[in-house]
Amino acid sequence: LVQTGPTSGISSVIRKKLMGYVGFANLPNQVHRKSVRKGFQFTCMVVGESGLGKSTLINTLFNTTLYPPKEPLAPAAERPKTVAIESIGADIEENGVRLHLTVVDTPGFGDFVNNDDSWKPIVENIESRFDSYLEQENRVNRMKVVDNRVHACLYFIQPTGHSLKQIDIEFMRRLHTKVNLIPVIAKADTLTDEEVAEFKERILSDIAYHNIHIFQAPTYDNEDEETIAEAEEIASKIPFAVVGSDKIVNTPDGRQVRGRAYPWGVVEVDNEEHCDFVKLRQMLVRTYMEELREYTNDVLYENWRTEKLLSMGVAQDSTVFKEINPAARMQEERVLHEAKLAKMEAEMKMVFQQKVQEKEAKLKQSEEELYARHKEMKDALEKQRADLEDKKRKIESGRPLTPEKASTGRKKGFLRT
Ligand code: GDP
Image (cartoon, rainbow, N blue to C red):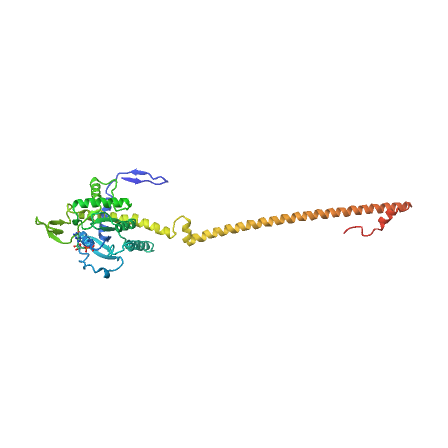
C-alpha cells in the first residue's frame, strides 16, 4: 500500500500495511454497478455507396433489425442530389446491460456522377455534434450532458479487389482527425481469400502513403500477454473483410447459422475462417467500445475544441485572449492610456522647465544691463559732482573759470534717462 505524505513541494510516498478491511478494493464493482444502472451511449456512423451492405452489417453487428429491408433504389433522376444524414436510435439490452445505440447513416455518399464534395456534409455533421457537446459543456448547469458525438465511423470499401478509389482516399483524409475510422471491405464473400489478402495489402499501403490515421486497438505496458495478443490479432485483420446477413441458413452439416447460402456452400458470418466479422465486432463492441469513446473524447474532440477556441481568439495567456475578453481588454487599454498620460505630463514638465530657464536667463541679462546703466549714471553724476566741487572751490578762491569748465556747468539734460 502506498500513501502520499504531507507535501512541501516534493511529495513523498510512504508504504503502509492495512490493519484490516477498508473496502476500497470494491471500487471497481461500484463503478461497474453505476455504469450498468446508467447504461451506455454509443454512436456509430456508416459511410459507403448504396448497396454495399451497410444496413445489413449494422443489423448483424447488433443482432437487431435496426434497419428495415430497403426499398429498391429509385431511378437516378428521382434520387436526392446531396448526401443526406439520417440517424436511427435504439435501446438494446444484453445480460441486463443497456446500450443506447445511434447509427448515423449517410445515404447518397458516392452515388452521384460528381462525388467531389461527398465528404463535406459528413464533416459538417460530425463537427456540429462536437459543437453541440461544447455548448453543453459551457452551460452553467451541466447535469444533463448528452453525448451525440460520433464514436466510430465504419467506412465501407467496395470489393473491387484493386485499390482504394479517389473518393475513399479523399473521405478518409478529410475525416481521420475528427472520427475513429474503421475501414471495412464490404461483401467480402464476393472475393476469394487471395484476392482479399492482396486487396488488404494495397489498401493499407494507400492508407500509409496518404498518412491516414485509422483506429488501432491500443495496448498498455502493464497489460497481460493475452490482451496484447488479442489486440495484435485484431490489428492484423484491418481493414476487416466482412460479410453481413441477418438471415439464418442451414449448413451442409446441419447447423443453423447466420450467413449467406450459395450453390457452392454457406458463408458463415460468425465464423472467423470465413470472414473478419467477429474481429470487427470485437473491435467495435466487445473489447474496444470504451476505448473508442475515450479516444473520441480525449483526443479527437479535444483537438477539435482547442482548434475551435483558438480560431475564435480564445487563449489563456496570450494577447489574443485580451482581444475577446472585455475585462482584460479594458485593463490593457487603461494601462496604455495611463502610460500615454504619464508621457504627456513628462513632456509638458520638460517644456515648462525649458521656458523657465529661458526666462531666468533673460531676466538675468536685463538685470545686468540695468546694473551697468545704473553704474554709468552714478559715475557720470560722481564726475559732475566732482566738477561742481572743483568749480565751487575755484569761485571761492577767486580764480576765473576756463571756457570749457563754464560750458560743462551749463549743460542741462546731460543724464540719459
Ligand atoms: P446499403 O445500401 O449499403 O445499406 O446496403 P444493404 O444492407 O441494404 O444491402 C444491399 C444488398 O446487398 C442487399 O440485397 C443485401 O442482402 C446484400 N448484402 C448485404 N451484405 C452483403 C454481404 O456481405 N455479401 C453479399 N454478397 N451481399 C450482401
